[in-house]
Length: 205
Image (cartoon, rainbow, N blue to C red; front, side):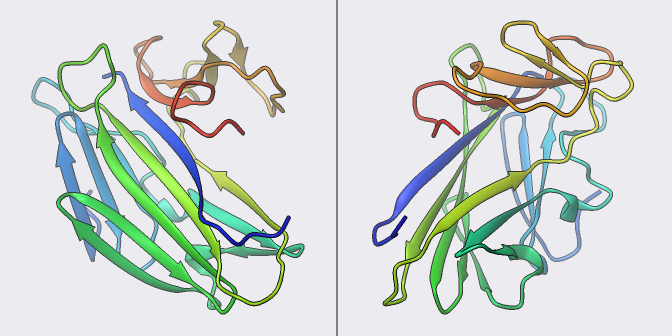
């Protein structure tokens, strides 16, 4: 696959319900996004409508366990850990982006806090990844994102799909994809971290 144009890959993370050193923090409604400016990794929190500690939607003890990697001509790069990519973090009007640049590619990772239709306040995060070939060669490029969440581990049901299918082990999904996958928080079956897979505006895997 030769890449010469910018093509968006968009992910929606919807929330139904420790500050990092060198962190860029963006907060709106029930969402707090923290970007570690030293590593380019991020943490995501749901802010309760009542007083209490924010709920970490990803594994926050080590945000590096959630990351994306790119395969370029069968060579895999973990961008936050790769010395081949330079990193620039920009925040414009509460919409941060990270620009990763190598001798071959420019990768723009953009974040936008959003509101779902059923919510009165912002309760989700839209993330887009745009990959542009800046070399003179044709490149074969693939993208993989690993999101490390622990929310469902104490329930015995790690993930639940929009068809109420429980996912408790390593699973490969094939088309037609469910609308979403939910990693439920410990005391609630219908809230936690929701990854939208097959809805308007989202790039279908």
